[in-house]
Image (cartoon, rainbow, N blue to C red; front, side, top):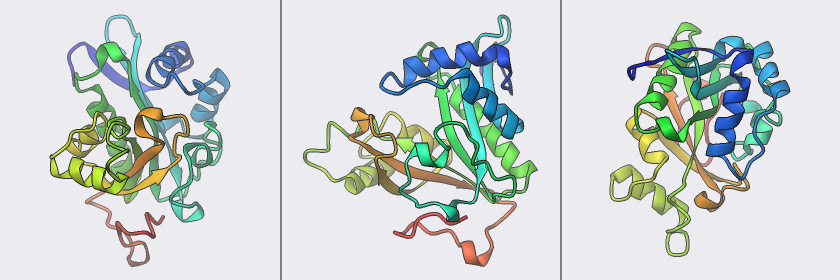
Length: 224
């Protein structure tokens, strides 16, 4: 844990801070509304985490999750579909996958380990609920510069091998995520990523998948 910060569950006084971070981190996207953040807490309160300054309580970062059965979706569904338009009202209490819908850190507090601590707290939830994996999607904000000369799969392979560094995907890989496959249009307005993202996942080592949901990194994509 970085000094002077702590992780706790999202509460209504945090909403303004979260919305402010949204505007800074995703300037091309509409930020969450208080009603959406209320919905997150109502349907899955134990899956909404914030990092706050220990002395002031100011929000420095957030990680929002929900449970899904991804077999009910297409692997290339955009964020809006997987989160019911950001409301999380598609949360499935029996879903075997914890979907990491959003993780963001205030620019003033980035590169200090808060994203890693927020991710670890979500992994603790996966273990506590005996879920078999956590799935998310990484932006590829370094890809736009390479897109004219390099396909997205070649770019991701270069990032995985360490030949290239991506501001988002490289961090996720260092945090123990595995790259699965690229998807187009995950965040349609993400010009830095040229419209692409990479499906990423972390498998709970204490709860392996059942045979019918065997982990694969192929065109079929993630299962449940």
